[in-house]
Picture 1 (tube, rainbow, N blue to C red):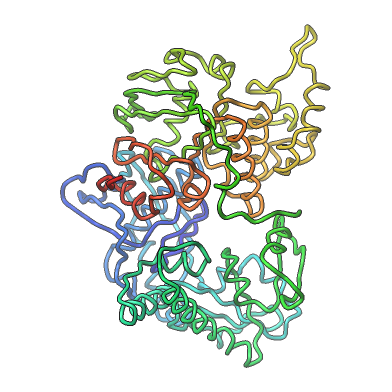
Picture 2: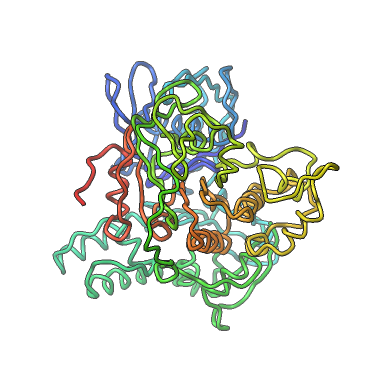
Length: 566
């Protein structure tokens, strides 16, 4: 199994696992209420406080332990767990400035450990890193796009990290390793400079989330002077790019942050489905709305605040109520103890929590996939604790799984055939399903159109994970459910499609649907939800008001901190 791990000074990242801060705590006794990794009789938990910057990450085992967290998360995300020894081919990166001196030591850091035995959340893992390959980080960041640079006489790939900005010179598509280096000009250093200057000049304390919010143009509680100073220092940071451009280099900046694209770029290139769909100079009136439109393949309106779109419901009709629910995983371990949840008509409830803390199990229990062993569940006032999935579908419940490719796709079946599953409003006759009725409904469905469902005769299994997610959400919405359980409906989608997902959820909410939305993106939950519930330790918090609750407060609850005063 090939797994790439980005050992950033700010975050550890893999393709499918949620990024996490490069911070670590250890103890000789098992900590309570957190994701715990056990290795060689020592317990480790992740920390929001980063390991101090170091050029050589092999000085101790901390980055190796962080790698174990990443490998376990990636294996779980792929659904590839096995109790047998799993052979891993590990791909890692180093800043170009350190590559030559450290590449051998960094690869041996992972290679010479034999079979590695550890536990993650009580589950045993056995892995063998049979090979480790190391690449300059700038090269790895752009590996999939190098073929687009063959006609450029000079191009610089720039990978902006936490403490360094790594660059690599390309000449007509060929790597020039003599011009490959790292500049000590990363975003963490920028943030530290911003925080220090704002503190010294304005006597204000900013955290990194505050700096992010200011640079992304979001509403903040800070005065205009702090916003201007932050933006000014960010522009000085960008001058590093501009100076290289002025020296005659073409710079390939790869980023998922649209504000960085708009701030730094002279020419904007848009990739969609692996192909270049647009290459345009920014000075020709190119704006962020057009960028999003090209990324998604259609027009889209940008919204950052959905409050003005939400219908007010005077009567708060309770559609679902769970009391004293205990939620268990497949290994019979209790994840949520005596949890209470009330879902009302015309309400989006955001469910936040550290990955693997019971989000999936809670939704599957509410839907009837798992048995509710303790507690009570009522739907529209009717006791449904022991009811079947079919009973809950008939009561108006729909589920969008966190992994629809694994949970919903039937090999060989077409998209429209999948829409006949899981209880859509279709007619059953003696000859079977009324397929014409079903396909007509798909052709006229607003959700099918706006969510960009591919041609209905295509086999669903042949589509990408993002397209499968679109199909499953459209299927659920087309049924016009009273209760929608939506787990990560925007995961893996481009920014334009994410916007359409949010619009779809808000419109469904305005029709009186009650929605439980699971997301790892706190900004998404804060912008879309009417209230937020957090899995904190093994409990469900009371509903929080997103207007008066910050991402920092939610994060504190997620890692088991004290519930803030409301």
